[in-house]
Image (tube, rainbow, N blue to C red; front, top):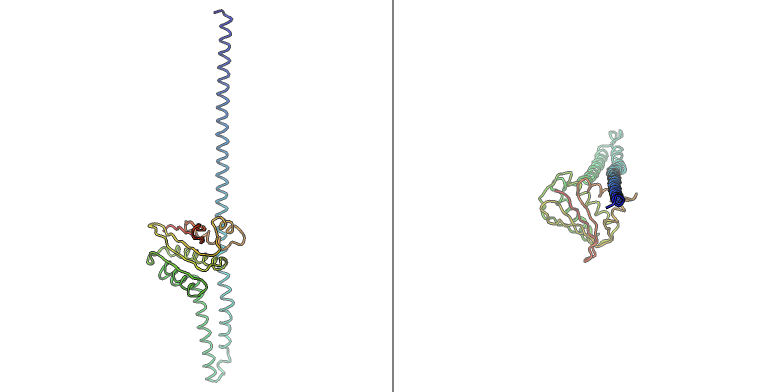
Length: 271
């Protein structure tokens, strides 16, 4: 082999090696850039998710605060509009002229005051019962929910039934109160908007969590429409449900049963 041929072969090999090395460097650079951009994208997604979760927490917290404020305003209105006039009337009967009245008139005036005080006591008791029903406090969630459905059924406005597997099981008092408020809020929404003729609450069998199924035959929601309405300015009641379920670490799903065409609300709450 002549020197010229050897030089050409060596030169060709050098070009191949150079091209291969350049290709490997370009491939490695491309992989590095891909990893860098992918990591940046992941970080951006994580930040977006974190921001979304923070916004959701803020929305739920605001809903909880708004719910508490609404409850305070309602109590204040009840006391001002109902208890206030009753106490003012009692004071009128107990004015200085009482002592100048004849004995029979004094007894009559004092009798009126007693009636007014009894009515005021009943009013305050009713306000207290709306805040914390005595059945819930003394006998637990199952009894309180059953009592609420029984009263609803006897009112004649709608057919209502409630079935719990274990009426004697008690939960943490705060948890029972929150679950009861969720059920109460769901009932209020159904009675107000669904035009249902019947409603049922049933405890589903589960060894660990508390699983409840609420169904009715009126107009209802899906989970998607629930989330949309809860995010709107007028969805305070639904926001309250969402915030309470969040605090309970529970799940709530709204569906329409394709077989019965009933709307169903499933609640899954850690015991």
